[in-house]
Image (tube, rainbow, N blue to C red):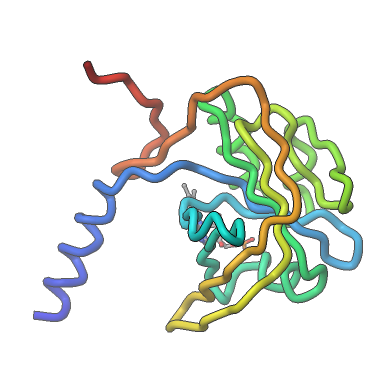
Length: 162
Ligand SMILES: Cc1cc2nc3c(=O)[nH]c(=O)nc-3n(C[C@H](O)[C@H](O)[C@H](O)COP(=O)(O)O)c2cc1C
């Protein structure tokens, strides 16, 4: 029963479209990052979001190290950058894309829809993952709304419904 539930759960979550982000941080001053869909708005007062990061991810070290991260909410024009970034080893990922450095030193993508810089808030470990609350320090908005999505194992863009 458990195997069946977990298989069905995987299929269910594949249908739960997610906006794609690149999470960035600094590890001993070096940029590190991962592609992530587990990014959600949490509260407006205070401005806070939540991310979920696999405990075996290279990104965990940079979170512990820098105490701050940026959620770059990708634009649909950034699918290829996202693919390439995800395919590279951790230390080489920033060789693709036009990166800038924010006021707080964290690398961000000016062409993303938005870049949200956060300080580490409360953390909850659950199984394979860390659920991390980010306290928003700084937001950079670009002109375009047009999210890059991930659904059923593929990148996608939104179409309006009337
Ligand atoms: C579309 C997509 C969404 C992902 N979402 C997450 C996520 O929300 N959390 C996470 O820890 N890893 C996520 N991953 C996997 C990470 O990008 C990364 O490969 C993983 O955390 C291992 O990190 P490392 O390769 O730097 O060691 C996602 C990958 C893809 C392609």
